[in-house]
Length: 188
Image (cartoon, rainbow, N blue to C red; front, side):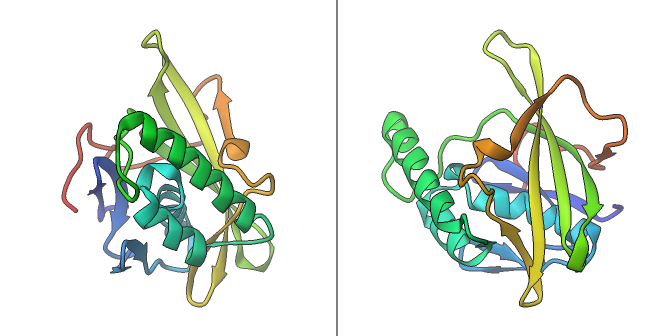
């Protein structure tokens, strides 16, 4: 990953590659990934961020509509709308605005090839507990190649929480993002 760089999305740094993607934007969405493991990983990062409440409704609505697929897509849309509305009101933001960036740090990933060219991507990140202790989490995403780009299969339970798992430690076979995620955002 010699061409990996970090781009700032409303205070949240996301990894990007000039060769693996995203190569362009369509409205608020990052698109254009290579049909390989790294392209699937980068798409999983960008799409899971864009299709979650943190990105704000101006981003997650089109992301959920065009970059998320599968039978649970509508249930996920409803859950994200609900989570966003609650967090937005609590933060005193107007509809469309991104939520304040959290303290999560993306460490790395694991990729498993699935039938029909699909990929299982496990993203591993850390964040701080209320007492300041480091917590390790994984987010599992199933990526599918459709219409010359990656799409994220909506979690079967229809919520992001259903694909987040707390881990006891960082997996030893993790591919680490290199360079590591900066502590502050970069360029957008």
